[in-house]
Amino acid sequence: MPFFRRFYKHFLKFLFFPLALSLLIHLFTKSSIAAGFALGTIASIFLLLNWYYNLEKAYDNEAGKIRTGTVARLLIVIVTCLFWVRFPDIFSIFGIAGGLMLSYIMMIFRAVKELTK
Figure 1 (cartoon, one colour):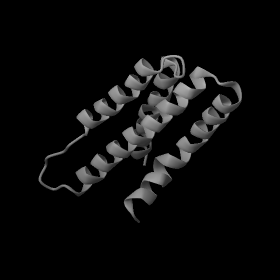
Figure 2 (figure 1 turned 90 degrees about the horizontal axis):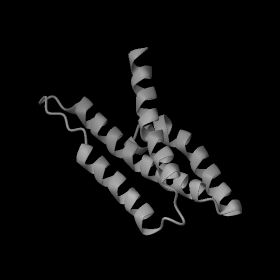
Figure 3 (figure 1 turned 180 degrees about the horizontal axis):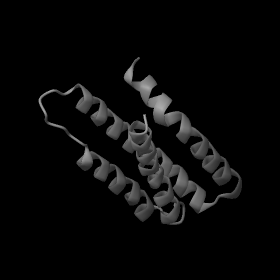
């Protein structure tokens, strides 16, 4: 199964619902929290993509060197927060933080699922 299909199966299909819901709420109410949540969810998708890519590489790597992609994930979060700094009236930092937390919640669920197999 291709990488993107595995990524969709494990993570992306669960993140589309909160993304679509927050975009609809922002569309009808112009809520800055909903806009921030949508931005955080989009960033969360990129965080999970980076994390899952490094996880797949770690499974295939037999040399013992494992990369976690921490610097790339940190840059994604910084760029996302720079959107809030540049447009504070459009994006709420609380919505952004909530959207970014989705990726870490998904990582924890993935770890618990692997441990309970």
